[in-house]
Image (tube, rainbow, N blue to C red; front, side):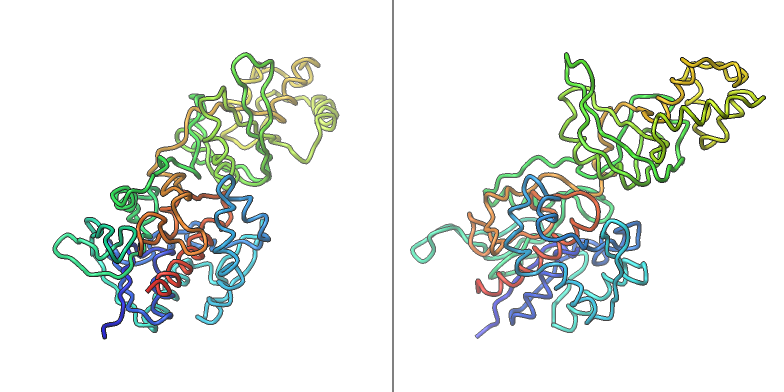
Length: 424
């Protein structure tokens, strides 16, 4: 009697966990990766350092995936952070916790995590086929023995492969150079699934202001950034959420850790009004303290443009001075109370207007994908086609930055692999 075969499409974080776990459960696991190597996106996670998970408790994790977070209760209850860390420890990868609960390998090399999972799969007998592109699923209709359609194989460019179960773990459409080009959406749609339109979830923000272009490369540390929206007809902007940490300016907008976190919410606000980002350049000081400091400092015998050097990074001097409307050559000891108030206001509320999200191919994570209403949250199996499972970013789940998205990929992959083996 032949051993049942599970075919996993996609060799990223979710696909590797799915393949390894399926093989561990006693079935023949075949992993098909269309690219030349496994874990390409995993290898660049966390700027190559590998932010693989987070120390947040389960309720925080679920909230990070809002509004679709509750879908993950089932998989997180069966394979969660501690299980992942124990697994990595057993594979020789030690981890450490950093700011914000982010967890990294001690080596600061994401590739160590990917390599460890490759070894784990090899030890369990997973058959890995690189440069193997899947054209479509082979689905048999319902008959006397089966109440629903069922997957019976996959059609590749250059052949066909029988399968008793198939796991789609192809990722989203962000970082297409790593192989995430939306192939899984087409396969899922062909199988009758609903696909929530893919959009960038964690992405840099493109701003309207032209002067931002001149700040490209400028990094601001220890700033507080607030997302604002001013709906049509509103008297003033409404504060949505704030983040503290590091950001940077790009050739056409803003990015960096706290901007990526805010971008997830910003994307949902675009089109509802004027969306802005307010940067508090001096969060450690209140407006009153800044006023007192400037009153003291403005007794100096120096020009305004020279004084700003003590207050701001070099690249920020020109746009800041222009926005205050104060003559660059004006002696600071002749600056008026009204002008001083303008300087304080801008230091505490340096605004840029969000025009749009950066293009999808620059996004870290995709929002959208296979509808969670059509996937069994306990097993990751399709509710429409027997033997068809989903794992990772191809599903309509996405979270803020901090390791949450990779944990979801690992967890859904592990459970999909286990469930596919149990299904057989």
